[in-house]
Image 1 (cartoon, rainbow, N blue to C red):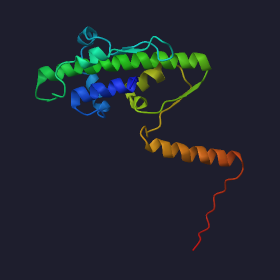
Image 2: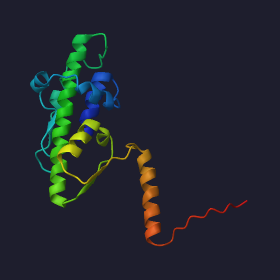
Image 3: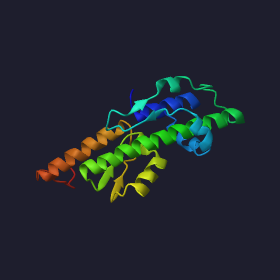
Image 4: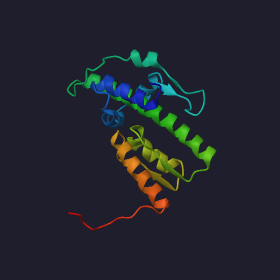
Length: 173
């Protein structure tokens, strides 16, 4: 897939052997050295809102030591930490650029981010500190369960707006 979340998941799979261990990648990124991470190629860059966004799949496929995570192996752990830092920096740069563009284009004062990338608390901290939204909402249900919650909320809002929704506390036997 051509998405920032897919790239992050690819790194998660490379390091931990689990495409869904993205939270571990985010945490590990804080142990990466900035200079060492800068020596790695950018895995993604550009702006999602333009034709400048690109993913370097060749760089992703050429990473060393796939699925060899062992906490006891300090050399590999450091290597993985640098990789995690590189992908975290890339994710932040691309997402911040895109959200900044959306804010300018729409003039929106509030932001809601859904999905797995929306669970990246390091990115969320930057959004809150740097982009000047009045309110930022990040639902805690990024997976398929969010669909049912969203549908229920939409149905409630639509019925309430139409005046056709009433809550009854009576019990029927």
